[in-house]
Figure 1: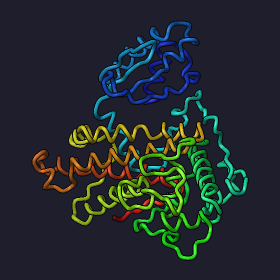
Figure 2: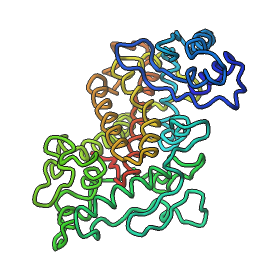
Figure 3: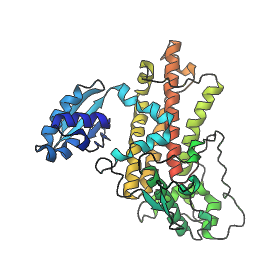
Figure 4: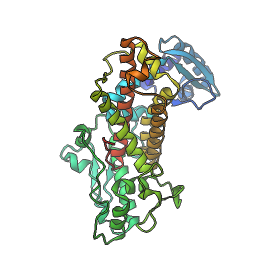
Length: 401
């Protein structure tokens, strides 16, 4: 979409395409026209020496000529609101399904608020909280495990220091992921383990002495990292019953294995999305997304209300990662992941993957296969983005329920 908007804006203004900044499209809030909006015409108005509205009007005309665009309208002082075809909106699903890390990180440059090629004020270098050692994605001498290392929270002593380490670990990883184009994917994500479970070696551990170690024995490492990274500012709670700095004596919902615990909810959503694909394989109904453009039945299925809502949240992922990196605030990524998990569950509650559940809507066997492939692709896309996001905050993603 960035290429589409920038190309139209360059043609509308006569500005050299190489000088056109990233378009940073964002989803349009409910109740307003269009699916996505860009302020690029406003940003180009100075270079073009005319109003943002004038640039937006000509850009909208050119966008409407695209086969991927249903409509483009001008709003306010120069925003251009774009309505895409269902096929264009759904096109991100195969990309995210094939490579969750690549999808979430590939567009962080244009999702940032900086100019073309910007990687944000957070920069490409971060430091490990407990060592102060610079971590650079460009340093080829560093091993993969060093590059993406996490601090041993059980050695932090106090819960407050463990929280500082966890947040700095997340900032380091987010900076690396949102850093220079081509930053290598961590081996832990490349070598996916289909049998990843829920076991946490520190959960329930006996003999914990320090406050940090006792906390991890009560809530586990995953819940502790999510709790620490979810906290925003100096608030005592990040949600009802969710202390921003839980302790072994007062863990709140972080100690529960229910949806009230955001860490459990996130990991459960990933496990469900991953297991759904395995269930389809076991039932002999696994149909992968074919290469190339999505078929009409696949597009129609992905354009249903809850599916389209989930696709929309997937679209937001690169922007959320870029914002978390630029502002140095991991909670932005955590809250995004929670929104994605919620949208996934809303979608799965309205649809199934078995041929029996698709028979009424798709009488033809070929159409059922294509719709099943679309739904399995959406599961894979959701799992890939959740798994990447959880990794960036130092949390494992179970694949089994």
